Image (cartoon, rainbow, N blue to C red; front, side):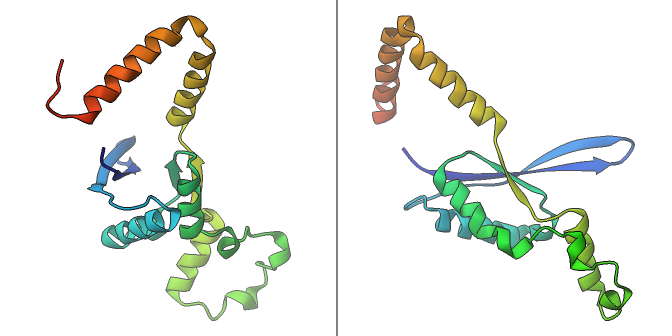
Length: 161
């Protein structure tokens, strides 16, 4: 059993209608402990490699504690506080000394906000179905046999059906 870190990017391209495109950015071996810090470092290096940090709107991953921690490390909430009317953003003097990069940052922050971590719907559905199947007592013996077979097949590459 080997660990891998897979990252896909999904973008909406507006050319003759909106088209969804998906790209595999990485599917690499992930050795060592799968801590939030290590996942955050690996994700951060991918963001640098593809120069996509400023283009991110959402991070979608499972609800494992290490994934939650990884993306709270990458995108801490207090760094990108929500903009409110109390921030006096309508004051014209506030915007006079901004460079073009600063204007882009302000625009991105106001219009898009920070990247947000979302739960993977498919993963949540799979967990829900799994919990429901645990309660289906009539299937328990079949699932136990299939689980043993699956474990046996994953322990050695020499065994096959």
